[in-house]
Length: 256
Image 1 (cartoon, rainbow, N blue to C red):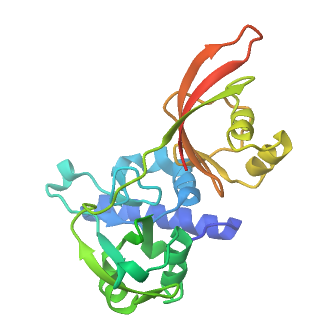
Image 2 (cartoon, rainbow, N blue to C red):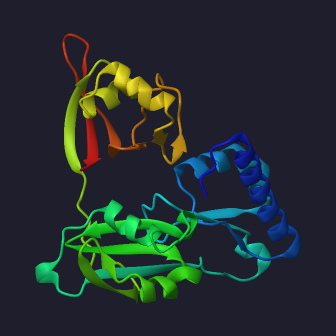
């Protein structure tokens, strides 16, 4: 789901309210589709209103960007129900002759099969292979139909865990900034002008801890995860020290 227009946002909010109500009144778990950062931000606007039903957010792995929301409290319902999320391992038939893959390559191949984006979660890529989290209802179809990415023939199989995925750890960096303001930090970290940084806020491309922020002057707090669409994300680890001229040497961990 790409909730963008006012009508779409209103419909999405109504759907969230309905899922929460149905879970509470019918004593059952209900689940949303896979939600991106913008949808999670919209949910955040209703978070207090829907808290009565209880909810959990999960995307298949610990640091998932795209997540599913499950409404319902296990202690009140008297049972537990797993998230209907399946992990698919996508790998070339012949590793030696495989193309190098990007996230966009795998996503494009999946979309070419006519699969809706809200059925798909995170795609993790590395070592010429990919791992896809998706709604369980679409998993068998993907395993059967996804046979090629770029010029490479691939095979898809359902996996139990990310045992073959080696995530690149974030790179530790230090940057000299005037303050902990988000716009200044983003400009410095991604080598942008201040006006380019401000444009990212106006274009709704900056998310902090999974929620959209349009307040470019807010101070970044230790431990926050900042996602800048089109550039990547970083974790803010605080001020290392302040120079004699009042500038601050800040520490971050950035995903390259």
